[in-house]
Every structure is written in C-alpha cells, then in structure tokens.
Image 1 (cartoon, rainbow, N blue to C red):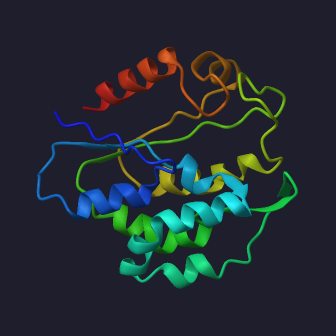
Image 2: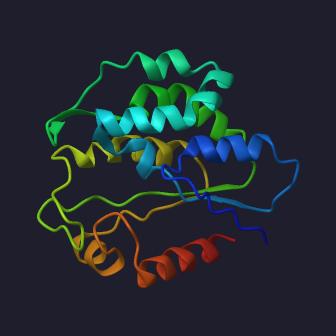
Length: 182
C-alpha cells in the first residue's frame, strides 16, 4: 500500500492529477481525499496565491487562461471578493472527465460547514462557504466508488475540529468507510 500526502499549502485535485499523470504504477484502488481547497470560496488574494503555486501545471494543461480570467465572484469575505478555485463548469467539463479515466478511484466527499459553529477556527467562514457542496455533489454523482463524508450537524462537530479539518475520530471514521469499500 502506498500513501501520498501532498505537502502543499493548497493541496488540490490538480496536485493529484499531476502525481497520477507522472506515475506509472498500477493500483487496486486510489483514494482521493481532496476537494475542499478547490471548491471552498476563498478571498481573491488567497485565490491568486493558490494560482501562482499551480501556474506551471495549469499552463501545461492549457487551463491557465480560464484561471486568470475569472469573473464568477461570490460574496465578500474579509473585505475581498471570494472565488472558488474551480467553478461548477470547470468541475463538470474538465475535471470530472479526467477523473473518470482513473481506474478504481474512490472519492471522499466533503462535509457541510455549520454556520453557527466554528470549533477551534478563530473567525467566521465566508457566508457562502457551503457553495462548495455544489461541486462536491457533482463529483459524488458522476464518479463511481464514492464515500460521503457529508455528515449531519452532530457528526460534523464530532469528527472535525473546525468544520473542515478532521480530528482523530473523523480520520478513523473515514478510514473505516474507505476500508469497507476495498
């Protein structure tokens, strides 16, 4: 069994695609536990920082123009417009077709963010944070072998420290769900 934990500040599905494209290994199963970075609304300054880190890959795939010319802003957060790194159209038209080509892919979905609970996160999240669930639902509908981490409110509090980052119990639960699929 191989494990690949991406060490990047903004670990993205793009990092998975780059790793997968450069790998010549065959796997019985590939677990993709990624998406919140790509789908969650983020301030424009954060979007641009992520864009600069993914620049070479995006340019190589011919996607750079799309990422540089976005106008599909959401709410404002911390005095800035927000933008999801990947729009619904990009996920539907570009990302999902590529992921469907990955044999034995198991996609771990993301959970909703509770607007009334921050856990140990030091500030409120963008009011449009759950817009991320639109892209996630597309992934869940289109990809085979999915695992839902879309928990109810009680389980979000039980399995995460801040709505987004899993605690030990949450990682164990996702691990059990993955093992049940293998």
